[in-house]
Structure formats: structure tokens, C-alpha cells
Amino acid sequence: MTPVFALIDCNSFYASCERVFRPDLSRTPIVVLSNNDGCIIARSAEAKPLVKMGQPYYQVKELLQGHGVVAFSSNYALYGDMSQRVMTVIEGMVPALEVYSIDEAFVDLTGMPGDLDYLGRCIRERVLKHTGIPVGVGIAGTKTLAKLANHAAKRWASHSGWVVDLRDPVKYHWVLKKCDVSEVWGIGKRLTAQLRDMAIRTAWDLSRADPALLRKTFSVVVEKTARELAGTSCLQLEHAQPPRQEICCSRMFGQRLTALAPLKEAVATYVMRASEKLRQQRSLARRMRVSIRTGMFNPDEPRYANGVLVQLPYPTDDLRLLTRMAQEALERVYRQGFRYSKAEVLLLDLCQRGEYTGDLFSAQQTQSAERVMAVIDGVNQRWGRGTLRSAAVPAAAEWAMRRGLMSEGFTTQVAGLWRVG
DNA sequence: TCTGGGGTCCTAGGACCC
DNA sequence: TCTGGGGTCCTAGGACCC
Image (cartoon, rainbow, N blue to C red; front, side):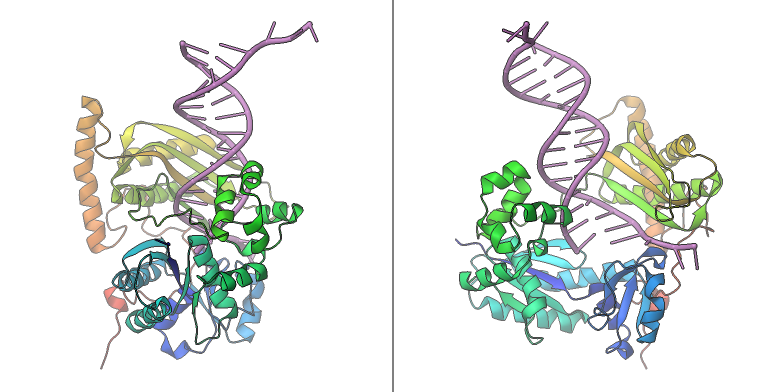
């Protein structure tokens, strides 16, 4: 059977989420900022011509204010919750769904009877009605082409559209010829430059290139991308999300830190968050990497970036052990005289609980740790993150993120609920 | 003054083994 | 002159994505 995929993605997702709860802003341009209100990471359609993605906020703040643009700090609890709602609606309408990112899903429509264009429009309507979030739908014979169809929907479709079916070769050849190779999924900046040197400029050129040569020059990934553009499906829908192979928590501080003590607090805080994620997927870590760095943009400031890899005594998810070892690691990389901007905790070499059988000593420790961790996670789930925490983590930190423009927890906190009447 | 965070996959190259 | 060859495992680093 000929495979058929669709990619469904939310338009200006973070900005749309904010707008759902602020109908007064339905025509106002909106931007959403990264942590610490650093750069622009989402723009509503009206704001798109004014600023580029990733632009530092401080550079465009005045310009935006001049145009009446409303800025929000990012509110990930809200976006995560809205994402789940969108995915649930789509899941009820298709045979199989792969959540690809917070605002995108691939679906497998192979063998679906009926008019797929109509199905696409139904999905769009229902998601909009049930969640308030507008989505676009791209349909094609491969995942890479479905991505491109989605891209084409934004670039060429009239606004009544938002659904583009590229199964017809005449249509997708037309789109391939119009698209620069850099617009193809999987082709970033570097590859674009290298492909250009080989006279491959458009998506069409890439689809016609010799797969063997691409494999030899680059990798199988590029080869598959080219084959997919040519219409041969190489990438399947990934059904069950396998557990993550590494877990990371890294964050810029709200202000530069010089002393060891606040860095220790930050590292302890990141360990707490990373270990929560670890336990959520029922994994244990064998190794951990702790690193710190100064800012990178100021040329006058001395730079330093370093990290250490820690071998854990046995695979563990024990917050207490991880915190202790992370702080020791921090002491080893810390140097005086620098203004640090960021710390990172990476949990590596993960294995699933149950896959691992330790010796008797560590088994006993693991069992008692498991009970303590279950209590911590249970309390925090019920009463909010950070209710129960290790003593190394402060209640309110001087280095905490700046996010002065944050919306309320409309769907995630009782205090944020709307009152009607 | 001020520039995000969290992932994945692939390859190259070194160490080691027979 | 000419110093094996092939396999595996591990790690670091590059590139990409949203």
C-alpha cells in the first residue's frame, strides 16, 4: 500500500497559547520570550514581519513597543498542558500519531479511505474548536515531503487553506523546484553551504542527486532525506517513545555569579529537576556531567567553560547521592575570578530500572532510596514542584530566572482559573 | 547591562583483541 | 624500501531539530 503521512503543526504555538486566554489580544501582535526574557522564540503572524526568530529582546524592545506588540515571558507549564490537549484531539481522529515536538505531530494516513483533504480540514476545525489553537496540515507520501507540504501551506496557501496535499507528483515537483535546499527538514546551515558547492541549490536538485554520492560525501541521513524528497518513504512513524538516552537540565542565571556558594545552589536545583525527569521515565543514571561557563558574547570579559564527567558508584536516581556528587564535581571545575552565566547537569548512560541488577549492598541502598524518592515525587506532584527539596536548594534564589512578563497558570494553577459570572 | 533549553543521530578515531 | 587486517567498543564532537 502506498504510504501516506501528514504533519500537523500549531501556528505560532506559544503566541497562540497566550492568545487563547487573552481574547482581547486577538488582533494584537504577540511575541514570546525565552528564559530570562532573552530572545524572541515565538511570534504571532502580525509580529513576524517586525522581528526575526531568536533575536535578542533588548535589541528590539523599543521597536516592538512602538508597534504595540505585547511580549510574554515563556510559560512552559501552560504550553505543555495546551499541547497535550491538542494531541488528544488529533489522536481521536486518526489511526496512529507520533508526537514529534511540543507543537507538531506526524500521523499515518496509509489506507485511510475518503478525501484526505477534507479530513485535514476537519482536524483543523476540531482542534480550533476544542482548544482555540490554529493548526496547519501537510499531506504527502513521505515524512520529509509532509514537512515540506506543511511549509508550503504557510508560504503559498491562501488563509482559508492551511491544508496542503502534495501527493500529486505534479504538485510536489512544483514545490520542490520553488524551495531552497535549506528549507528541507534535516538540512541545516552547514549542509546548505556544502550542498551549494556541489551545485545543489533547491529541494528539487537534492531529490535528483545521486544517493550513493550523498551517502559517501555526508551520511545516510542526507541520503535518506534525498530519497524521501524523491518520493520513497524511508522514515516510519515512531509509535512508542523510547525512554530518553540522556537527560539534561541547563539554564542561564538571572544574573552573573562569581562565588561558589550560589553556583552550588544552582547545580543542586538542576540536579533536582534532572533527577525528576529521570525517575519519571523510570531510568537510572550511571554517569553525570556537571559543567559551568561564563558568558560568550562579551569579548572584553575573560571566558571559561569546563565540565567534569562523574562515574556514579552504581546506577542511581537518588537525589541525595546525585546532589552530593554534583557538588563535588562543581568544586573541581570552579575557578575564581570569572563571572558565570550558566550551569548544566547532564545525566548519561541511562538504563531502565529492572534491567539492572546490582550487588546486594547497592540493591539495599537502591530500595530504600526508591521509597524516599517516591515520597518526594508524590508530595511535589500534589503540592507543586519544590515543595519538598534537598537542603542545598534555596526557596527563592538570587540567581533565579528573570521572567517579568509571564502570564498566569490558566490551566495549571487553581489561582489562574478563569472566573465566570 | 542584556543573546534559550533540551534533545537526537551519525561519524571518526583511538584502544583493544585475535 | 616495504612492519597485518579486521572486528568491536567507546568517546568526543559535529550537525541538526524545535
